[in-house]
Image (cartoon, rainbow, N blue to C red; front, side):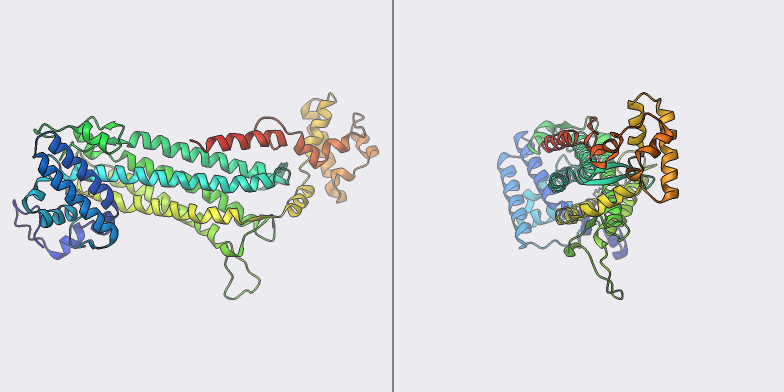
Length: 458
Ligand code: ARG
Protein backbone atom coordinates (compact mmCIF):
# COMPACT_ATOMS: atom_id res chain seq x y z
CA UNK A 1 0.00 0.00 0.00
CA UNK A 2 1.27 3.51 -0.84
CA UNK A 3 2.57 5.32 2.23
CA UNK A 4 0.95 8.64 3.14
CA UNK A 5 4.41 9.86 4.06
CA UNK A 6 5.98 8.86 0.71
CA UNK A 7 8.01 11.79 -0.61
CA UNK A 8 11.53 11.92 0.73
CA UNK A 9 11.56 8.20 -0.06
CA UNK A 10 9.24 6.27 -2.34
CA UNK A 11 7.80 4.70 0.77
CA UNK A 12 8.63 1.29 -0.62
CA UNK A 13 9.37 -0.47 2.65
CA UNK A 14 9.88 -4.16 3.00
CA UNK A 15 6.84 -6.16 4.15
CA UNK A 16 8.74 -7.32 7.23
CA UNK A 17 9.63 -3.73 8.04
CA UNK A 18 5.99 -2.71 7.63
CA UNK A 19 4.82 -5.35 10.07
CA UNK A 20 7.59 -4.49 12.49
CA UNK A 21 6.78 -0.80 12.31
CA UNK A 22 3.03 -1.11 12.55
CA UNK A 23 1.06 -0.29 15.70
CA UNK A 24 -2.50 -0.44 14.37
CA UNK A 25 -3.14 -3.84 15.94
CA UNK A 26 -2.91 -2.24 19.39
CA UNK A 27 -3.53 1.49 18.88
CA UNK A 28 -6.82 1.10 16.96
CA UNK A 29 -8.55 1.02 20.35
CA UNK A 30 -7.90 4.79 20.47
CA UNK A 31 -10.00 5.48 17.36
CA UNK A 32 -12.65 7.42 19.27
CA UNK A 33 -10.12 9.75 20.87
CA UNK A 34 -8.24 10.09 17.58
CA UNK A 35 -11.37 11.19 15.72
CA UNK A 36 -12.53 13.55 18.50
CA UNK A 37 -9.07 15.09 18.55
CA UNK A 38 -9.14 15.55 14.79
CA UNK A 39 -12.57 17.19 14.94
CA UNK A 40 -11.29 19.74 17.46
CA UNK A 41 -8.23 20.29 15.31
CA UNK A 42 -10.34 20.87 12.18
CA UNK A 43 -12.59 23.26 14.09
CA UNK A 44 -9.53 25.19 15.28
CA UNK A 45 -8.06 25.39 11.78
CA UNK A 46 -11.38 26.80 10.54
CA UNK A 47 -11.85 29.24 13.42
CA UNK A 48 -8.32 30.58 12.93
CA UNK A 49 -8.77 30.97 9.18
CA UNK A 50 -5.98 28.48 8.45
CA UNK A 51 -8.46 26.60 6.31
CA UNK A 52 -11.90 27.82 5.22
CA UNK A 53 -14.75 27.40 7.71
CA UNK A 54 -16.63 25.38 5.11
CA UNK A 55 -13.67 23.05 4.74
CA UNK A 56 -13.54 22.61 8.50
CA UNK A 57 -17.25 21.73 8.47
CA UNK A 58 -16.66 19.20 5.71
CA UNK A 59 -13.79 17.62 7.64
CA UNK A 60 -15.83 17.43 10.84
CA UNK A 61 -18.80 15.88 9.04
CA UNK A 62 -16.44 13.40 7.37
CA UNK A 63 -14.89 12.48 10.72
CA UNK A 64 -18.35 12.09 12.26
CA UNK A 65 -19.23 9.68 9.45
CA UNK A 66 -16.08 7.64 10.03
CA UNK A 67 -16.78 7.48 13.76
CA UNK A 68 -20.35 6.33 13.17
CA UNK A 69 -19.21 3.70 10.68
CA UNK A 70 -16.53 2.40 13.01
CA UNK A 71 -19.01 2.19 15.89
CA UNK A 72 -21.58 0.35 13.77
CA UNK A 73 -18.96 -1.96 12.31
CA UNK A 74 -19.72 -0.77 8.77
CA UNK A 75 -16.11 0.36 8.40
CA UNK A 76 -13.60 -2.35 9.21
CA UNK A 77 -10.17 -1.19 10.37
CA UNK A 78 -7.55 -1.79 7.72
CA UNK A 79 -4.73 -3.58 9.47
CA UNK A 80 -2.39 -2.75 6.58
CA UNK A 81 -2.25 0.85 7.78
CA UNK A 82 0.69 1.84 9.94
CA UNK A 83 -1.38 3.15 12.82
CA UNK A 84 -4.84 4.41 13.71
CA UNK A 85 -3.91 8.02 12.91
CA UNK A 86 -2.93 7.10 9.34
CA UNK A 87 -6.00 4.92 8.94
CA UNK A 88 -8.47 7.67 9.88
CA UNK A 89 -6.72 10.23 7.70
CA UNK A 90 -6.60 7.86 4.79
CA UNK A 91 -10.32 7.00 4.97
CA UNK A 92 -11.10 10.69 5.31
CA UNK A 93 -9.11 11.50 2.19
CA UNK A 94 -10.70 8.64 0.27
CA UNK A 95 -14.12 9.94 1.22
CA UNK A 96 -13.53 13.70 0.87
CA UNK A 97 -10.79 13.99 -1.70
CA UNK A 98 -8.39 16.93 -1.43
CA UNK A 99 -10.12 18.55 1.56
CA UNK A 100 -9.20 15.48 3.58
CA UNK A 101 -5.57 16.22 2.94
CA UNK A 102 -5.88 19.52 4.83
CA UNK A 103 -6.59 17.94 8.22
CA UNK A 104 -2.95 17.37 9.07
CA UNK A 105 -2.04 21.06 8.69
CA UNK A 106 -0.22 22.38 11.78
CA UNK A 107 -0.15 18.96 13.38
CA UNK A 108 2.13 15.96 13.59
CA UNK A 109 1.52 12.38 14.59
CA UNK A 110 3.80 13.13 17.50
CA UNK A 111 1.40 15.53 19.20
CA UNK A 112 -1.54 13.52 17.86
CA UNK A 113 -0.49 10.28 19.51
CA UNK A 114 0.31 12.06 22.77
CA UNK A 115 -3.15 13.62 22.66
CA UNK A 116 -4.94 10.36 21.89
CA UNK A 117 -3.16 8.53 24.68
CA UNK A 118 -3.91 11.19 27.26
CA UNK A 119 -7.58 11.23 26.28
CA UNK A 120 -7.76 7.45 26.22
CA UNK A 121 -6.17 7.00 29.64
CA UNK A 122 -8.29 9.80 31.06
CA UNK A 123 -11.41 7.84 30.04
CA UNK A 124 -9.94 4.58 31.32
CA UNK A 125 -9.05 6.18 34.67
CA UNK A 126 -12.67 7.25 35.08
CA UNK A 127 -13.82 3.70 34.34
CA UNK A 128 -11.40 2.25 36.88
CA UNK A 129 -12.48 4.73 39.55
CA UNK A 130 -16.12 3.74 38.93
CA UNK A 131 -15.20 0.06 39.38
CA UNK A 132 -13.26 0.86 42.55
CA UNK A 133 -16.35 2.52 43.98
CA UNK A 134 -18.43 -0.53 43.10
CA UNK A 135 -15.96 -2.75 44.92
CA UNK A 136 -16.09 -0.50 47.98
CA UNK A 137 -19.90 -0.72 47.90
CA UNK A 138 -19.71 -4.51 47.77
CA UNK A 139 -17.36 -4.42 50.77
CA UNK A 140 -19.68 -2.07 52.66
CA UNK A 141 -22.49 -4.61 52.34
CA UNK A 142 -20.33 -7.28 53.96
CA UNK A 143 -19.19 -4.77 56.58
CA UNK A 144 -22.77 -3.87 57.54
CA UNK A 145 -23.53 -7.55 58.25
CA UNK A 146 -20.36 -8.18 60.24
CA UNK A 147 -19.94 -5.23 62.59
CA UNK A 148 -19.85 -7.52 65.64
CA UNK A 149 -18.41 -10.62 64.01
CA UNK A 150 -15.36 -11.31 66.15
CA UNK A 151 -12.26 -12.66 64.45
CA UNK A 152 -8.59 -12.80 65.38
CA UNK A 153 -6.46 -10.00 64.01
CA UNK A 154 -3.03 -11.18 62.93
CA UNK A 155 0.56 -10.01 62.94
CA UNK A 156 3.23 -12.30 61.47
CA UNK A 157 0.21 -14.44 60.55
CA UNK A 158 0.00 -15.30 64.26
CA UNK A 159 -3.22 -14.57 66.12
CA UNK A 160 -2.64 -11.22 67.76
CA UNK A 161 -5.65 -9.30 69.07
CA UNK A 162 -9.40 -9.51 68.68
CA UNK A 163 -10.97 -7.47 65.89
CA UNK A 164 -14.16 -7.77 63.85
CA UNK A 165 -14.57 -8.94 60.29
CA UNK A 166 -16.01 -5.50 59.49
CA UNK A 167 -12.93 -3.80 60.92
CA UNK A 168 -10.67 -5.98 58.79
CA UNK A 169 -12.65 -5.31 55.60
CA UNK A 170 -12.67 -1.58 56.37
CA UNK A 171 -8.89 -1.65 56.09
CA UNK A 172 -9.30 -2.65 52.44
CA UNK A 173 -11.82 0.15 51.90
CA UNK A 174 -9.18 2.63 53.06
CA UNK A 175 -6.67 1.24 50.55
CA UNK A 176 -9.20 1.43 47.74
CA UNK A 177 -10.11 5.01 48.66
CA UNK A 178 -6.44 5.90 48.40
CA UNK A 179 -6.39 4.23 44.99
CA UNK A 180 -9.26 6.48 43.91
CA UNK A 181 -7.33 9.50 45.18
CA UNK A 182 -4.24 8.36 43.33
CA UNK A 183 -6.07 7.98 40.01
CA UNK A 184 -7.77 11.35 40.44
CA UNK A 185 -4.54 13.05 41.37
CA UNK A 186 -2.73 11.48 38.42
CA UNK A 187 -5.56 12.60 36.14
CA UNK A 188 -5.05 16.20 37.22
CA UNK A 189 -1.45 16.16 35.94
CA UNK A 190 -2.36 14.17 32.85
CA UNK A 191 -5.21 16.41 31.80
CA UNK A 192 -3.13 18.93 29.84
CA UNK A 193 -3.30 19.07 26.05
CA UNK A 194 -0.21 18.39 23.92
CA UNK A 195 -1.98 19.10 20.61
CA UNK A 196 -0.36 22.02 18.80
CA UNK A 197 3.16 21.05 19.89
CA UNK A 198 3.33 19.55 16.38
CA UNK A 199 6.44 17.50 15.59
CA UNK A 200 8.40 19.12 18.44
CA UNK A 201 8.88 22.78 17.62
CA UNK A 202 5.37 24.16 17.36
CA UNK A 203 4.33 25.84 14.14
CA UNK A 204 4.37 29.09 12.19
CA UNK A 205 0.60 28.89 11.66
CA UNK A 206 -1.54 31.06 13.88
CA UNK A 207 -3.01 28.15 15.84
CA UNK A 208 -5.03 28.36 19.04
CA UNK A 209 -3.99 25.57 21.37
CA UNK A 210 -6.34 26.73 24.12
CA UNK A 211 -9.32 26.42 21.79
CA UNK A 212 -8.49 22.75 21.12
CA UNK A 213 -7.71 22.02 24.76
CA UNK A 214 -11.03 23.43 25.89
CA UNK A 215 -13.03 21.55 23.26
CA UNK A 216 -11.44 18.30 24.33
CA UNK A 217 -12.06 18.82 28.05
CA UNK A 218 -8.50 19.55 29.12
CA UNK A 219 -7.70 21.81 32.05
CA UNK A 220 -4.83 23.48 30.21
CA UNK A 221 -2.01 22.84 27.75
CA UNK A 222 1.52 21.41 27.88
CA UNK A 223 3.64 24.53 28.12
CA UNK A 224 6.71 23.37 26.20
CA UNK A 225 6.33 21.86 22.76
CA UNK A 226 9.34 19.55 23.13
CA UNK A 227 8.07 18.28 26.46
CA UNK A 228 4.54 17.98 25.09
CA UNK A 229 5.56 15.33 22.55
CA UNK A 230 8.24 13.63 24.69
CA UNK A 231 6.42 13.39 27.99
CA UNK A 232 5.07 10.00 28.99
CA UNK A 233 5.10 10.66 32.73
CA UNK A 234 1.34 10.30 32.65
CA UNK A 235 1.79 6.73 31.38
CA UNK A 236 4.25 5.89 34.13
CA UNK A 237 1.96 7.40 36.73
CA UNK A 238 -1.07 5.66 35.31
CA UNK A 239 0.54 2.23 35.39
CA UNK A 240 1.99 2.99 38.80
CA UNK A 241 -1.56 3.65 40.07
CA UNK A 242 -2.58 0.35 38.47
CA UNK A 243 0.34 -1.48 40.09
CA UNK A 244 -0.49 -0.13 43.56
CA UNK A 245 -4.14 -1.02 43.11
CA UNK A 246 -3.17 -4.54 42.00
CA UNK A 247 -0.93 -4.87 45.06
CA UNK A 248 -3.99 -4.17 47.20
CA UNK A 249 -6.16 -6.63 45.27
CA UNK A 250 -3.39 -9.19 45.54
CA UNK A 251 -3.07 -8.87 49.32
CA UNK A 252 -6.83 -9.17 49.61
CA UNK A 253 -6.84 -12.18 47.30
CA UNK A 254 -4.16 -13.82 49.40
CA UNK A 255 -6.35 -13.45 52.49
CA UNK A 256 -9.40 -14.75 50.67
CA UNK A 257 -7.37 -17.79 49.60
CA UNK A 258 -6.23 -18.37 53.19
CA UNK A 259 -9.69 -17.76 54.63
CA UNK A 260 -11.30 -20.27 52.28
CA UNK A 261 -8.82 -23.02 53.21
CA UNK A 262 -9.89 -25.73 55.67
CA UNK A 263 -7.20 -24.44 58.01
CA UNK A 264 -9.17 -21.20 58.41
CA UNK A 265 -12.65 -21.65 56.88
CA UNK A 266 -13.54 -18.05 57.74
CA UNK A 267 -15.36 -17.59 54.44
CA UNK A 268 -17.03 -19.63 51.78
CA UNK A 269 -16.79 -18.38 48.22
CA UNK A 270 -19.76 -18.80 45.90
CA UNK A 271 -19.53 -21.77 43.55
CA UNK A 272 -19.75 -19.24 40.74
CA UNK A 273 -16.25 -17.97 41.52
CA UNK A 274 -14.44 -21.19 42.36
CA UNK A 275 -13.41 -24.24 40.39
CA UNK A 276 -13.14 -27.95 41.01
CA UNK A 277 -10.18 -30.23 40.51
CA UNK A 278 -9.99 -32.65 37.61
CA UNK A 279 -8.76 -35.38 39.95
CA UNK A 280 -9.61 -34.52 43.57
CA UNK A 281 -13.39 -34.62 43.97
CA UNK A 282 -13.39 -32.75 47.29
CA UNK A 283 -11.70 -29.62 45.95
CA UNK A 284 -13.16 -26.14 45.68
CA UNK A 285 -10.37 -23.91 44.51
CA UNK A 286 -10.27 -20.12 44.76
CA UNK A 287 -8.87 -19.74 41.23
CA UNK A 288 -10.24 -16.23 40.68
CA UNK A 289 -8.45 -14.88 43.74
CA UNK A 290 -5.29 -16.73 42.76
CA UNK A 291 -5.42 -15.29 39.26
CA UNK A 292 -5.83 -11.77 40.59
CA UNK A 293 -2.76 -12.38 42.77
CA UNK A 294 -0.94 -13.79 39.75
CA UNK A 295 -1.95 -11.04 37.34
CA UNK A 296 -0.48 -8.50 39.73
CA UNK A 297 2.89 -9.65 38.46
CA UNK A 298 2.14 -8.70 34.89
CA UNK A 299 1.00 -5.22 35.86
CA UNK A 300 4.26 -4.73 37.79
CA UNK A 301 5.96 -5.86 34.58
CA UNK A 302 4.01 -3.28 32.59
CA UNK A 303 5.29 -0.58 34.94
CA UNK A 304 8.88 -1.73 34.60
CA UNK A 305 8.39 -1.91 30.83
CA UNK A 306 7.31 1.69 30.35
CA UNK A 307 10.00 3.00 32.71
CA UNK A 308 12.63 1.08 30.79
CA UNK A 309 11.38 2.21 27.37
CA UNK A 310 11.69 5.84 28.43
CA UNK A 311 15.03 5.55 30.16
CA UNK A 312 17.76 7.04 28.03
CA UNK A 313 15.53 8.44 25.26
CA UNK A 314 16.82 11.73 23.90
CA UNK A 315 14.28 14.50 23.30
CA UNK A 316 11.92 14.67 21.52
CA UNK A 317 9.83 11.88 19.92
CA UNK A 318 11.53 8.54 19.23
CA UNK A 319 9.84 5.53 17.73
CA UNK A 320 10.69 3.62 20.92
CA UNK A 321 7.73 5.46 22.37
CA UNK A 322 5.35 3.40 20.28
CA UNK A 323 6.30 0.63 22.73
CA UNK A 324 4.46 2.48 25.51
CA UNK A 325 1.03 1.33 24.45
CA UNK A 326 0.85 -2.44 24.72
CA UNK A 327 2.03 -2.49 28.32
CA UNK A 328 -0.27 0.34 29.34
CA UNK A 329 -3.27 -1.21 27.67
CA UNK A 330 -2.43 -4.54 29.23
CA UNK A 331 -2.41 -2.84 32.63
CA UNK A 332 -5.76 -1.18 31.88
CA UNK A 333 -7.39 -4.43 30.73
CA UNK A 334 -5.94 -6.48 33.57
CA UNK A 335 -7.05 -4.02 36.26
CA UNK A 336 -10.55 -3.77 34.80
CA UNK A 337 -10.85 -7.53 34.52
CA UNK A 338 -9.62 -8.11 38.07
CA UNK A 339 -11.95 -5.50 39.57
CA UNK A 340 -14.77 -6.88 37.45
CA UNK A 341 -14.38 -10.35 38.97
CA UNK A 342 -13.51 -9.16 42.48
CA UNK A 343 -16.79 -7.24 42.86
CA UNK A 344 -19.21 -10.19 42.47
CA UNK A 345 -16.79 -12.52 44.26
CA UNK A 346 -16.94 -10.26 47.33
CA UNK A 347 -20.70 -9.67 47.10
CA UNK A 348 -21.40 -13.40 47.05
CA UNK A 349 -18.77 -14.40 49.64
CA UNK A 350 -20.25 -15.83 52.86
CA UNK A 351 -18.59 -15.09 56.19
CA UNK A 352 -18.56 -17.97 58.70
CA UNK A 353 -18.65 -16.15 62.07
CA UNK A 354 -18.56 -19.37 64.18
CA UNK A 355 -15.19 -20.32 62.76
CA UNK A 356 -13.81 -16.83 63.17
CA UNK A 357 -14.93 -16.81 66.80
CA UNK A 358 -13.48 -20.25 67.44
CA UNK A 359 -10.12 -19.12 66.09
CA UNK A 360 -10.35 -15.98 68.21
CA UNK A 361 -10.96 -18.09 71.32
CA UNK A 362 -7.92 -20.25 70.75
CA UNK A 363 -4.91 -18.00 70.34
CA UNK A 364 -4.68 -16.08 73.66
CA UNK A 365 -5.52 -12.94 71.72
CA UNK A 366 -6.83 -11.37 74.93
CA UNK A 367 -3.38 -11.53 76.59
CA UNK A 368 -2.82 -7.80 75.93
CA UNK A 369 -6.17 -7.08 77.55
CA UNK A 370 -5.14 -9.14 80.56
CA UNK A 371 -2.02 -6.98 80.89
CA UNK A 372 -4.05 -3.80 80.34
CA UNK A 373 -6.36 -4.94 83.14
CA UNK A 374 -3.44 -4.88 85.58
CA UNK A 375 -2.20 -1.55 84.21
CA UNK A 376 -5.61 -0.02 84.88
CA UNK A 377 -5.22 -1.28 88.49
CA UNK A 378 -1.93 0.59 88.79
CA UNK A 379 0.81 -1.77 87.61
CA UNK A 380 3.39 -0.41 85.09
CA UNK A 381 2.77 -1.91 81.61
CA UNK A 382 6.07 -3.83 81.37
CA UNK A 383 5.43 -5.63 84.68
CA UNK A 384 1.85 -6.37 83.68
CA UNK A 385 3.09 -7.66 80.30
CA UNK A 386 5.42 -10.06 82.08
CA UNK A 387 2.72 -11.44 84.35
CA UNK A 388 0.30 -11.89 81.48
CA UNK A 389 2.98 -13.72 79.49
CA UNK A 390 3.72 -16.09 82.39
CA UNK A 391 0.03 -16.90 82.77
CA UNK A 392 -0.23 -17.62 79.03
CA UNK A 393 2.79 -19.93 79.28
CA UNK A 394 1.16 -21.77 82.17
CA UNK A 395 -2.10 -22.10 80.19
CA UNK A 396 -0.20 -23.56 77.24
CA UNK A 397 1.37 -26.13 79.55
CA UNK A 398 -2.02 -26.98 81.05
CA UNK A 399 -3.79 -26.83 77.68
CA UNK A 400 -6.36 -24.32 78.91
CA UNK A 401 -7.40 -20.75 78.09
CA UNK A 402 -7.20 -17.48 80.06
CA UNK A 403 -10.95 -17.57 80.66
CA UNK A 404 -10.68 -20.87 82.57
CA UNK A 405 -7.91 -19.82 84.98
CA UNK A 406 -9.44 -19.53 88.47
CA UNK A 407 -9.28 -16.32 90.46
CA UNK A 408 -7.15 -18.14 93.03
CA UNK A 409 -4.63 -19.02 90.35
CA UNK A 410 -4.67 -15.46 89.01
CA UNK A 411 -3.97 -14.14 92.52
CA UNK A 412 -0.80 -16.25 92.71
CA UNK A 413 0.60 -13.87 90.07
CA UNK A 414 -0.76 -10.60 91.47
CA UNK A 415 -3.20 -9.63 94.21
CA UNK A 416 -4.53 -6.91 91.89
CA UNK A 417 -6.65 -9.59 90.19
CA UNK A 418 -10.34 -9.57 91.07
CA UNK A 419 -13.47 -11.23 89.75
CA UNK A 420 -13.93 -8.42 87.21
CA UNK A 421 -10.95 -9.86 85.31
CA UNK A 422 -13.23 -12.27 83.45
CA UNK A 423 -15.30 -9.47 82.01
CA UNK A 424 -12.11 -7.57 81.07
CA UNK A 425 -10.76 -10.47 79.05
CA UNK A 426 -13.96 -11.66 77.41
CA UNK A 427 -13.57 -11.30 73.66
CA UNK A 428 -16.80 -9.32 73.42
CA UNK A 429 -15.46 -6.77 75.91
CA UNK A 430 -12.05 -6.71 74.29
CA UNK A 431 -13.58 -5.72 70.98
CA UNK A 432 -16.38 -3.52 72.31
CA UNK A 433 -13.98 -1.46 74.42
CA UNK A 434 -11.56 -0.81 71.57
CA UNK A 435 -13.23 2.43 70.63
CA UNK A 436 -10.05 4.40 70.02
CA UNK A 437 -10.40 6.17 66.67
CA UNK A 438 -9.81 3.64 63.91
CA UNK A 439 -10.34 0.64 66.20
CA UNK A 440 -12.75 -2.32 65.92
CA UNK A 441 -15.26 -1.18 68.60
CA UNK A 442 -18.75 -0.59 67.26
CA UNK A 443 -18.60 3.20 67.62
CA UNK A 444 -15.23 3.40 65.88
CA UNK A 445 -16.39 1.00 63.20
CA UNK A 446 -19.48 3.14 62.50
CA UNK A 447 -17.28 6.22 62.17
CA UNK A 448 -15.09 4.40 59.66
CA UNK A 449 -18.13 3.31 57.67
CA UNK A 450 -19.23 6.94 57.51
CA UNK A 451 -15.76 7.96 56.40
CA UNK A 452 -15.79 5.39 53.60
CA UNK A 453 -19.30 6.33 52.48
CA UNK A 454 -18.31 10.00 52.30
CA UNK A 455 -15.21 8.98 50.38
CA UNK A 456 -17.37 7.55 47.61
CA UNK A 457 -18.19 11.06 46.43
CA UNK A 458 -14.54 11.75 45.57
N1 ARG B 1 2.35 4.96 15.96
C1 ARG B 1 3.16 5.98 16.51
C2 ARG B 1 3.28 5.81 18.02
O1 ARG B 1 2.53 5.07 18.56
C3 ARG B 1 2.58 7.31 16.20
C4 ARG B 1 3.58 8.42 16.15
C5 ARG B 1 4.45 8.27 14.98
N2 ARG B 1 5.27 9.40 14.77
C6 ARG B 1 6.32 9.35 13.95
N3 ARG B 1 6.99 10.43 13.81
N4 ARG B 1 6.65 8.25 13.35
O2 ARG B 1 4.12 6.37 18.66
